[in-house]
Length: 99
Image 1 (tube, rainbow, N blue to C red):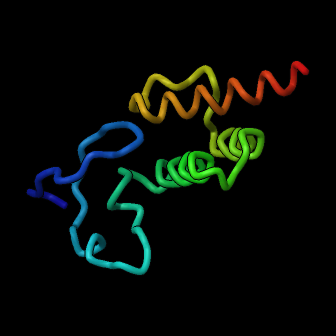
Image 2 (image 1 turned 120 degrees about the horizontal axis):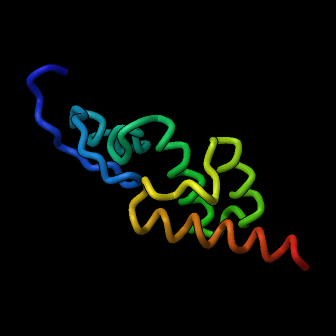
């Protein structure tokens, strides 16, 4: 929207973006606009959250991340928290393949 100020920060990449706060008032679900700057980042965020909560193992998370176009080599654009989780997922996947 023209003339609007950024009022959110993407939890994955740290980019500032504008999103109307009406979505924040919905209590039955978390709208992607409240935590991420794009739908793609929200999909990645959901994979990381699922892994972090123990609902998804590293191998499954890795496959989902690769399907979303995320690779071990390309993590510079992410926040430190996201980098840490990505590194953990990819490291566990590599170590399990080397067994």
